[in-house]
Image (cartoon, rainbow, N blue to C red; front, side):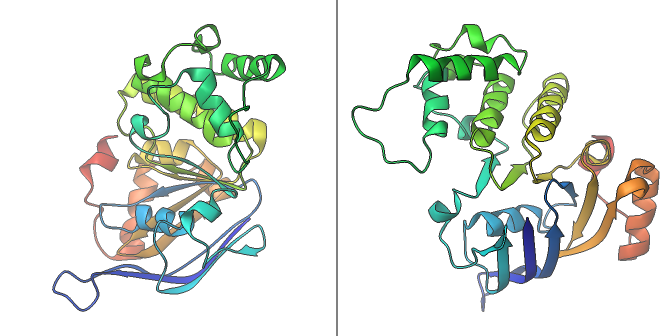
Length: 264
């Protein structure tokens, strides 16, 4: 479903602030893979997701989604392939619109909109049933302004919106990092349910080693613009934080130094 071939990205080339953020990254995701991505600050995690999403062009290499080479496509043209949830719960929804209007926008992504576009009763029932799956009571608040929701409620709604059209690839960029632990756990539970229900191919960045181990069928660790660990299947199921730290030290030759990841 995703094939990344030898992608490089350099920021501020030729200056004292030059940063080679991606150094020939290669990655293949099969249909239905749920891959967690972990690494310290500056490892290249978000740069890789932004490259896939087309936020900026890569300097070298190619990106293929479901057999289509999207390397040269701008961000708005890649939207048809992707769903994305950001770290900030405020980024994925329109605060001044109500819940059903936000869902309607997500449902009409990529379609031509006119002044006659409206939410039909049958459509409203579909949204209501989808909201019920979140277990947050939002199906009873469909006309409430999204700006009145909590951060966790908005992030759960954003997840629903990002997956409403069943994207080829779901990108989660530390989507629970801004939430308190209890709310983050609920959003991760919802994430698992939505991914499983729709069999979505997913890349999820996290700073939390425990979450990286507990979720998905595959884990990759990045360091200094490269993938240095790729753990899947039975090996991942048996993985502990201590195992992961040991593997990191073996692969990199140094200790893992992110307190945020260790303490979770």
